[in-house]
Image 1 (cartoon, one colour):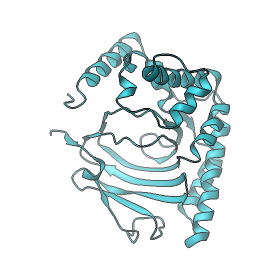
Image 2 (cartoon, one colour):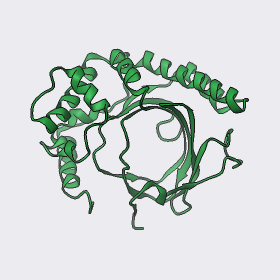
Image 3 (cartoon, one colour):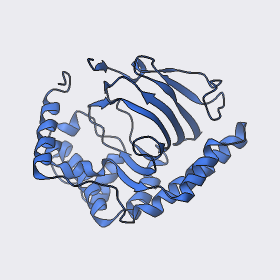
Length: 274
């Protein structure tokens, strides 16, 4: 079967109703999106807690693989907790601060249940630096190197300090086209090691997630309750970032060569991907 291609998110995620029985709980202010029957079933529920802070619950399965164009948005930080699915029992910190135009493949997969906490402006910088403080030195250096690379791609010279370059990236001033005008990011694979940092979920995280999914409140009390639980989840994740139990797999030389080659092919064919 041919893989379908979608040019925008609304092609495969449609508006849903807070009254849907499958939801754990909902409020009329929640944004509900449901998967198109063409590719899967389930929903994505976005709960706005306050400016710059959202809680997202995803419960879905995919029965038909598809490719989609990534939608660029302002920089944000994502803390992801996988309850059910291929990576069940894992939590991840996902910094979405550099988002060049790209395409992604969504494979067939059974039910996936995720809880995500999303930070954007004006809470982006405080929590970004909280993450920086908890990262191992090597990961911190990689993130600063990425920020410097982006800064140089626009101005032709390094920023006055790693922190200044990082501030620039967090501001969202860099355009997706500018991020790829100087050099080839696929030649610097270490930059993409920062794309997703995995840690094993703890019993405390599971307890907080159960409280989120089983929230008994409505209205303003519900929002206050969920905000407290979301920030508790992030605090637990930050405590674990400085630990060394990163979930990873080793790559041999041939694997790296194939990754570099695939990156170059995709970079040259963004609008007509193989």
